[in-house]
Image 1 (cartoon, each protein chain N blue to C red):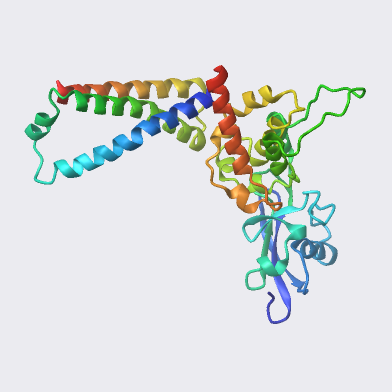
Image 2 (tube, each protein chain N blue to C red):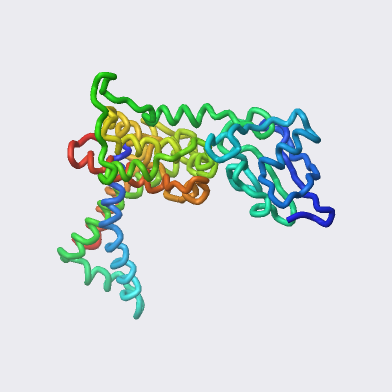
Length: 108
Length: 242
């Protein structure tokens, strides 16, 4: 399983790296003249491009983050085994659900 | 190298996991290894001082200790290169249980060597012809680059991942596994990849590179571990076995 997780974390990182850069540049660009909810929603609502962008972002982050947190917990605590894997699966599901809900809220 | 009286100030760990550094004054010589210093202390000041050595020429890998905070093979470490203001602090290796003074219990180190599949297993009998190996083949060159390990455990002691993850096999065991994965005569490559692809295996390495930094025979276990990572990933995509 470790090899699968290793591959999944690196593949999700390959998606995340460019997405994070675009996201950060977008933040700098979007706040240059102040920031309002109307301005954000005007850009995102009904946009297939931003739906795909942040949809993929959320999916990649939901895969990437729990694997990293699992590694940290295994190294820095004595938590191992099935219970840790289940907890990380719950974390992944929570990240995905809350993230996709947030995407839906700004694009629908 | 030495203080005004031409002596070294040497502090040596006495005890087990509980213990203390004891200071000794040792005559400084023009050519002197750390092992010479420890031996002088045992022969002239502290007959009960426990430490290990055998060959004294950098072959057996038994004299590794922590010298001024860094793991080193003491028989080939010249005092003038490591002493700071004429001072030496000599302690046992890190990441291994302490037995007495400078002697560590090497059992976990060699158990992990075995757990990683480090024992060669061929399928040729005495009557079979000696297998021909092409020394210029990529696999043999990869094995040769990693094969001169002397089992001194310096890399194991230097590795932070070993320090915080007791399940981690460590650089030496994984380096050995890499040589066998590249040995065409070895018949249990699959078993090695099964083991080192699991928890405690090659994917736990953080690529800090301490093993490369401190390996006394200048091997590159980090590169070997990176090779194992690639090999396990390739096998996953090719066969679905992780």
